[in-house]
Length: 93
Image 1 (cartoon, rainbow, N blue to C red):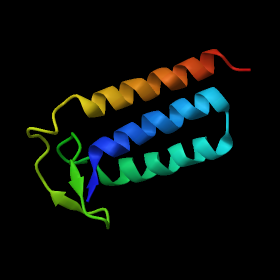
Image 2: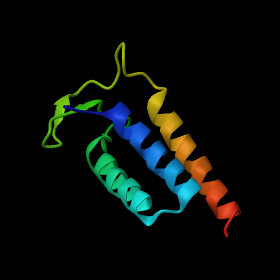
Image 3: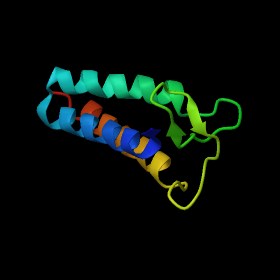
């Protein structure tokens, strides 16, 4: 299965690594994870992200919360990515 949490952490990690190294491959990996994540996890009709997808990227479980998936990870991911991007824009070399 593909879970929301590792995708959130991968977005943050690739962007953070790129911000420190400026290695283009890291930005490319961020872009790939971003495209997949925002194509498959969000519920376009009712908001929030589905937590669990099959290997093919289809929704495996249609609930969006539970003991392990709360409201913390997705907003934290988006906030951290925005902060990293803002910092990079403010500190252009």
